[in-house]
Picture 1 (cartoon, rainbow, N blue to C red):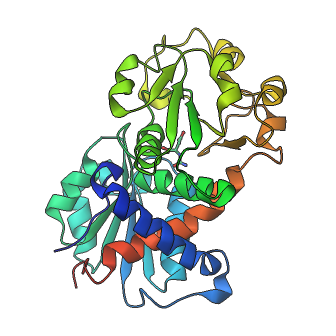
Picture 2 (cartoon, helix red, strand yellow):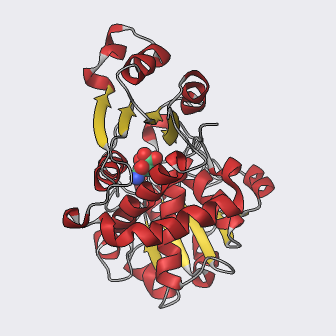
Length: 308
Ligand code: NCD
């Protein structure tokens, strides 16, 4: 049986812990090209990105190379889907050249699941619409573990455009699975009460809940996934839900600031907050390489033979 990573809902606590532990083991090899490994020598990883990406795509490429794999990059804007080819046809043709893992980012929720059914290669979801972004959730949990020593019992606030955010859905799943307390914060139009069913607290008042938090994760407004009208204006959003120096003062002195990037300076966080010593934004990016190495090894590990 091949192994895919499509979402954290399917992975469960044990799978999450196994990948985080493996990432910790691989971390010394993640950011130093000279300490490259050969675990995936002879394997090929294809990055199929149908939406914009910087951190995710580059870190999957580096992760694969630092495990000794070959990497191919497909960028939708320069490929045959532009000419009308279907997603499955594009992916099957790339697979036909000898690919073991397909990493897929797509604007449609469920696109990687469709590929997982149609390909022999293992499929890793690198973000599908507003649904899941499992490797981001894993690297967020890794970063909290690294900074605070644990996730269990930690109070984590996810702030902003929750309803359109795959990062929020994966983060909520990973933090809940590891025993964290998650509060979702933003305007009612972006943070409906229905999220309580997933085990999160919901608050529309940032200043009320901010002083209790151990970690805050600020999220970008997903303009590409919403019609205008859900917030009065970006400036209004920043005033009510942006983290600035004044709010930083009211937070626990140890409270860490996280953001998956790209950061819209002056909207979710001001520049001084983004660059403050309490910001873990660049640690998240660094940790993304080790976590993606672990994910690639995990999908191709002894139980996940890929195409073999
Ligand atoms: C996020 C994404 O694409 O979902 N970025 C990322 O992968 N680090 C978040 C975003 O675009 O706001």
